[in-house]
Image (cartoon, rainbow, N blue to C red):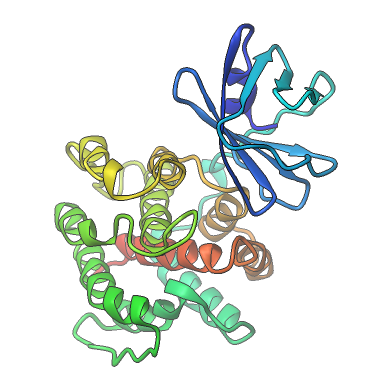
Length: 298
């Protein structure tokens, strides 16, 4: 169980089943906190509790009660977490961080090697074009796609990539607004892309706190304006990414990239990341790669 999920299961709290999607059950506490129950194949997250077996399908809106390490569902099922391990995301080991001027070449080499083995989906289709921009700012890639969503979103993503390369974070936020809630499914691709980008910013601040100015005034106020343009689950995950709380494979990918870990470990983490959802992992990866352009030197 994620540390945040454990902290939310305090005596006397309860709530309701918010959604049941893709074998995961999302619970909303009385205090408006989100946690979810999933099977063991799901990636870890601070809000996630992994179960050894699937739950019977629950009714949306049905109630639950919770106490110290237990949840009692309206269906009659009681879940006991007293023996559960608590998961917390690893932090960037600052003593092992690579030199800033090495990062661009490592990113490009690793991502190109990874793309040579995989066929991108969703906003992952942007990655090759983003790498072209990273190599040479005045290159304008010819992006072609038969998918209406990616065709619509690419001009926005391109402007964001160029703003990242210029380290113009206020422009990044301004250009990013059309992506909030853009797409279908539990987490729209636009939210995933922005989540990956803003998590990349968080890790860069952690790894290079004195080398890259990355403060964004009113960042949380900016994201709060998008609450009505997407669903609660996706909005919560987007806010978590801004605060440095990402899915485990994205966290692992970022730390492996920023430290002296070999390319093989970075690629392995990327391989796990793209398994998340139909194209969620790819869109997170595309956003993260775009966010890394903040670390490129002109």
